[in-house]
Amino acid sequence: MKTYTVKYERDSDGWWVASAAATKRLLAKLAKARAKEVAAGTAARKAAGRAVRELTERMNLSRRDAAVLTGYSFQRIQQLAQGR
Image (cartoon, rainbow, N blue to C red; front, side):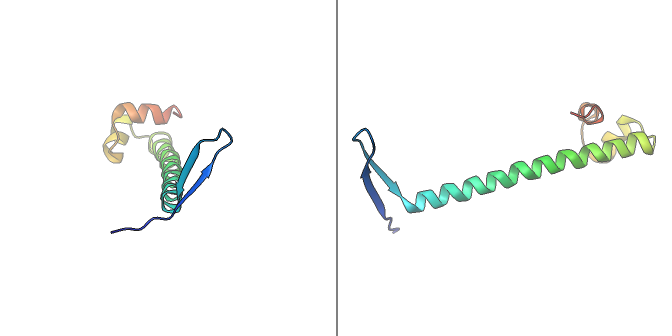
């Protein structure tokens, strides 16, 4: 069985507010993990764009070939080639 410490206080409108330190820690960890997730997604999109440009512009592969090599759909390759 878990034990939680709960702090009770009145807010500016006179309502009772209860807060648990464990919940705050849990939500802080979630916020940190979500920030990492967003950063990783941004980095992945940039890397994908660079790879598509390298494959299609410098190596002169077709966008369909780039799709096969990267595992992205042809439509996604089109988007990445256009910078989206």
